[in-house]
Amino acid sequence: MSHGEKHCCQHGHHPLPERGWVQFLLLLVINEEPMHAYQLSEELEKRGLVRKDRFKTGSLYTILNRMEEKELLSSQQEESEEGRPRRVYSITETGKANLRNGLEHMLRRKRMLDELERYYQQYFPEAQGNGEQENA
Image (tube, rainbow, N blue to C red; front, side, top):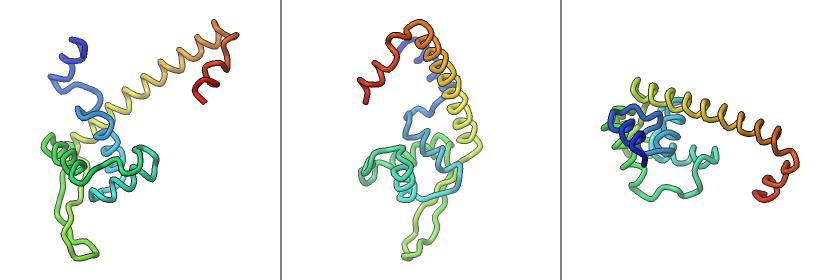
C-alpha cells in the first residue's frame, strides 16, 4: 500500500468500504431493499457478483456486523416464515454516501480505462484483437 493510500484510508475518505468489494457489493444490493444474510448471499450469487458458495457459515455475519459497527448498515430482528427470528439489514445514510462515493470512483476509473482503450486503438491498431484472443 502506498503512503497516499494509507493516508487516505486512515481518515475514512477511501472511496470504497474498507473491507473492499464484498462490502461494496453488499451495500449495492441492500440499497435496493433490506435483506437478511441468506437472501444477500443468494442475491450476490444470482447476479454473478460473487462465486457460488463464496461465504462460509458465519463469515457473512462477521462482515455485516463490521458494517453495522461502521454505521454503514442497521439491522432489526424479524420473525421468519419458519418461525425463527432473523436479522434484516438496511442501508444507512452513511452507507448510501459510501456507496455513492464508490460508484463515482468506479465511473471515473471506467472513463480512464475507456480513454486508455481509445489510445490503444489509435496507436496500436496492428495489435487489435491479439489481447482479446489471449484472454478468451
